[in-house]
Image 1 (tube, each protein chain N blue to C red):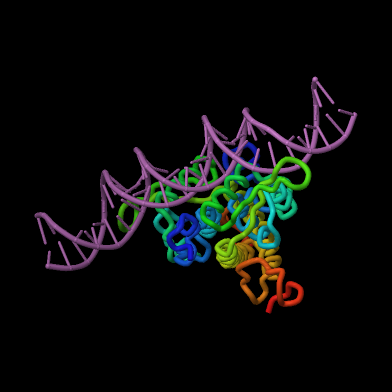
Image 2 (cartoon, rainbow over the protein chains, first blue to last red):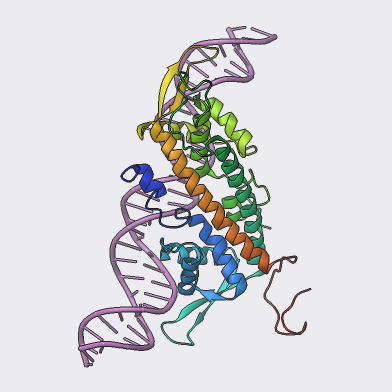
Length: 148
Length: 148
DNA sequence: ACATCTATATGATAATTACATATATATAAC
DNA sequence: GTTATATATATGTAATTATCATATAGATGT
């Protein structure tokens, strides 16, 4: 129904490209979490993002690289060129203690966000239990506004 | 720790202004849901947003009014001037069937998003159960990287 | 008459996101 | 050996979104 509309483009309905739209904002906490497990570099982190929940919507490399640089400017990560190993040199990132704190702050924020989404869904389900109503109750018929 | 930083400003850590940052994007599904319950107008919808989860971060009126107009352009709502009642005239919005469909699409998307957040939190908690680790394991001491 | 509350609206700027593309090294194929 | 492909990082620009400030105006209370 929204395939061609601006809103469809905006939110990727129907042809949803990942479990939850693009979730660009979600990239940062993921990077922080991955880096909390082990130091890593952009290309590898993008693979991990794919495995997490960005399967169909490959995260924009531009986003990942710029985010890592920005995190470094904020002193949440530090990077060193890694010329060992195969392939082109990698910029290897390691999480700092400030980065760990940022991750924990994100986790708190995400927990709160989850609660808000739950609250929304609870109310939504209460109203549209089995039927996905598509219009307002007609004042006529059906004896009082109950659906079936 | 992040109070003054760019990231603090960006995500409102510490002085978090609502359960989950500003959640500007979340305004649209909320408006759709409120309107699915009864026709309403901008000012009243802003009050409802406050009650929902935007308590401390009053939603920007500009955002609400522009979003309503944009939804109308997409034929998800229709508006009529309401000159009855007290105070200045209100632009009264009613959800269309397209609007109902959009709400249902949003609900699906939100359910998926919730799952992704849950997945993140699950993994996060597994790693930081009781201790909010703030650095990598030192290779020295403590016999193998276990925390206590 | 003046301030305040309700109500809608817009202009300007700042920040974010998306898309396209550039660069360079290493490896595999022909 | 040179062409294609995979790995790896990076930047420029356009488009979209978000924020902040401000404008307009009717109604109500003092």
